[in-house]
Each structure stands twice: as C-alpha cells, then as structure tokens.
Length: 482
Image 1 (cartoon, helix red, strand yellow):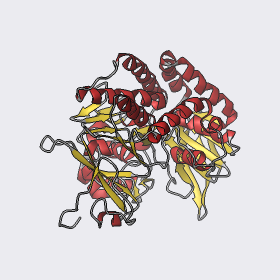
Image 2 (image 1 turned 30 degrees about the horizontal axis):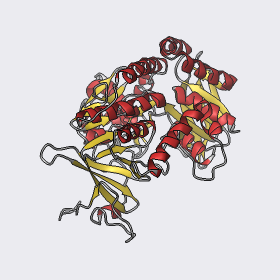
Image 3 (image 1 turned 90 degrees about the horizontal axis):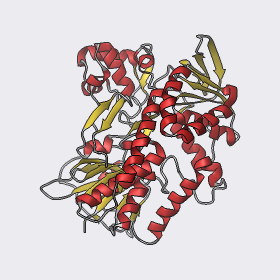
Image 4 (image 1 turned 60 degrees about the horizontal axis):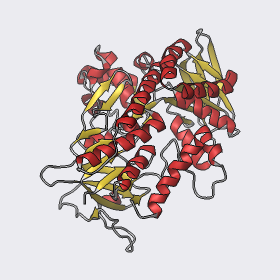
C-alpha cells in the first residue's frame, strides 16, 4: 500500500485527506499547529470561551464542518495525525528508490517519514513591504495579529493601526473591532479607482463574496483610508509610538499608536515545493514566484500541491484544490476516484476572482523600489536598502548573489518577509525587470530547528516511551558533521 504524506492540516490538507480516506487509503498528516484548521479556521486551545460565530463570523459553519470532518477521521483511526511538527527538510521522490523521506521536528524529537506520494498544503505567509521604522518593537504582520486574536483572544496593542492592502486588512480590522479592540486607523495603499477596476472582476466571479467584503469595509467607517502612502513608523525605547502617512490628496498625517500591523495580501510558501523539485515561474498577476503545476495540482513525479501554496485562492479555493490534488494522486496510483470536472469548474471561477483581487489590491512595487537608503529591508539581519543597492553593483541582477554578499534573506525567516522587497531594490538598482532577478533558493532546514534534534538518530526521542507512528522509519545520521 502506498504511503501518502500530507503536509498541512488547513482547508486544503483536510479535504485532501478526506478524499484519500474515502478511497480506502490511510494518509499521514503532518501539521505545525496543535489543532487542525489552518490559519483562516485556526482553532483556539481547549476551553476557549469565544464561540465559532465570534471567531469566524460568517464562515463559522464552514469552520465547524472542517474541524468536525477532520476530528472524525482522527477518532476513527483513518489517518495518522502528527500535530505540532514542523517539516524542516525532505528528499524528493526518486526513481531509484521509489520513495522519499521527510524530516520533521517536535522539540528535540526528530522523525523521518517515508512516503510514496507527497501532497504539500503548506499555505501562504504575509507578503510584507518594508516601511521606514518597521523594525521596531510593536510592528507585526497582519497574520500574526490574527493568530493572537483567534488562538488566545489577545489584541497586540491598546491603540492599533493596520496598514497595507488586501482582504485580510479589512477582515482583521473588523474582527478586532468586534472583539472590542481600539483600531485607530486602517490605511490601504491601494487607490479606490484601482480597487473598483479589480472589484468588477471580483464581482463577476463571486458577487456574494465581494458584497460581503464591502459590507465589512463599510462597518469600519472613517477609520478606513484608501490610496495612502506610508512614510515612517516612529517610536522610542518602549516601541512604536506613531505612524506618519499621506492620504490620497497628499496631505500629511500622524496617527499615534502602540501597535502597527502590516500586510500586502499573501505570499505562497515555496520552500518545501522547492526542496521537492518543483519548478517555479514569476507570475505578473500575483507579482511573485509561483509553483508550476497542472490544474489538478501535479507539480512533479509523486508531488502535488494544494491551497495557497499553489495559488492564492482563499479558504474556499483551498478546499477545492485539496480535493483535486487527492484526485490526481488517486488517478496516478490507478485507484478509483470521482470526476474532477465539477471541482475544476468551481476552481476556475475562484481563479478569476483571485485575479481580480490581485488587480484590486496590488503589491506596491514602486514604493518599495524607491525606499530611502536607511530603511531596513531585512529585519532578521538588519540590512538596509542602501546596503543592498551598494551590493547590487557587485552582485548584478541575481537574487542569490545579492543574498550571499549582503545577507538579505539569511535570517530565521529565510527570505519569507524580505525576498520580494529585496528583489525590487536589486531590480531598480540594476535597471532590470524584477522577474529577471530570480528567486532565493530554498535550503534545509526551512524552519529554525533546535541543534539537539540533529544530535540524535532520527526517531530517538528524549522520552523513552516515544514510538514511531505508522508510516515512519528510523534512519541513523551519517558518520559526518552536519
């Protein structure tokens, strides 16, 4: 029996697992979170008092169904579920040995899971554009602020400013207001005219979803400002104190705050697909590097992608993509599977909506490319735009050479938050198109991992009662330094 490994237990991973179980397979599901659900439907700890309606709003019914379906598969023993595990490295499927291996970490307990087929449903991270002063304490991504709210019922500030663009900007602001937080300002860098042009395409594809977004926007009232230009986040020893910005008419404003949340929609997480051997192409629609795959999510021999890691289609699109990836996997295994025709039709509509969304809420390429020399680009390493521009005279239009000479992208985030901005800086400095700069190559470990996890053979846990889960194998480390 083939072992199918699913990385990620969000909407895409859950629906992929469900489709495989219905076909009689027993997949292994690895997820970083303590409880399945993903970012959009993130679950709080047991005993949390807020109801699903309070946590997920109009999407509460979908969240409850996803959680219930996954919990039932676990309770029935239909899947092997490994929560709180971070996949840090993998070897791609090989024609020589017929399989591959995945290392994942839980504390200092390292395991290697053998697989025949790999479904990556790793989702996306916040797409961040640097702002002068964003390295100060009190500046978070929109996703981090949402995690704190959903998982712990915590507002990360007493007087909050959210800035960037995209649906999460409006949604998070609304969620914080409903939770009783003080949201002083919501600053959208996308002009209203741009939003309207993209909004027409969105409405044509998914009118009810578009209308719902507009209703949430309306409830923010005068807090919301469109077409702004962010100038500087100011602060002192205690962290953030205010943000300076210009409105659509060019008038300067200073808003006092003790927390700033930033985000420009999402960035597909391509680290594990890269290690698995997937090919990438620069998407002018999403203005980022995306995995090349067919409509069902096939990205290589025995490799399938689903969810926002493949295309930024949102939670509903992720559910469809998860089911489609599982259907592709079943077809390649020669097993019975449902027709994908209906799912593909719905997925294409989701894609049209997503393209309109990308048009309505664009990445601020020009603003990033023209940042002042002293603006920090890489928060992990403290590298400024000026340093990167100086490096570009030596590296030329090559992302990886610029990384090696400047250290941009060498920090713990491994370029997740600075790669796109760094490429804009290098492209402008070398008079090249950003697509020609290339992307940073992924390398293991793709997540920070404790050294102790690599000092023992795989499967050697600090708890002597620990056992390998089904589908896992113990592989000793080679006799050499790592």
